[in-house]
Image (cartoon, rainbow, N blue to C red; front, top):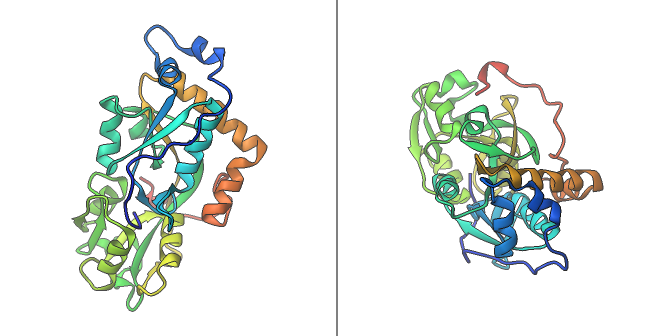
Length: 281
């Protein structure tokens, strides 16, 4: 899901006072120059959407912020380089990696086995589960995943959420990097019936727009999952370097602080929520 307006394509934070350490160069193999590439460019290029509240979005000051965005900024700071964000839809972010346009993608990406076949995955920065947004007045006629048959499910094409909806017989209505207000309004007015997505993203989006008569379907939670960053499959050196920094951020409490800032709860640790295990995808 996504939210708010789009603005500037890139935002750069200041160069820190220290450079990438020699250990980064040592972790680069002859084939894998991913760390030295960032070091030489003095810039970490990150693919994101700029429309996914509260992971990657523009605030009222037209600044690109969000949980994934701010974690990526801190990674760049600790690497001692600038950061540049490039904005795409989900398919575009994935393509940016294979085309060499970005060093990693940060946009609440699920760390799935399917993705692991194509990309190198970071350590988790968020633990979550999935839920469904429906109309407030009648729950869109949905009380379980089995009720998705014949319903209109909204989302970006080729996502795991849309694949799950389709597997239960839903009719897919696709969007291209749309904002959350468009998604929620379409459910409210009946253009669509349901949105499957991450629970915490949905919780924050619904709370941000209380005048749109939609809600999260209560007690229908499924697919416990982890999210993090995507890297090119062969760029293990950079992925390992970023993982080292993420471990430091967990240890010093900075990851928890960002989690609580954007989600009002510590999503950097696993939830004890019970799930419908039959819906795991």
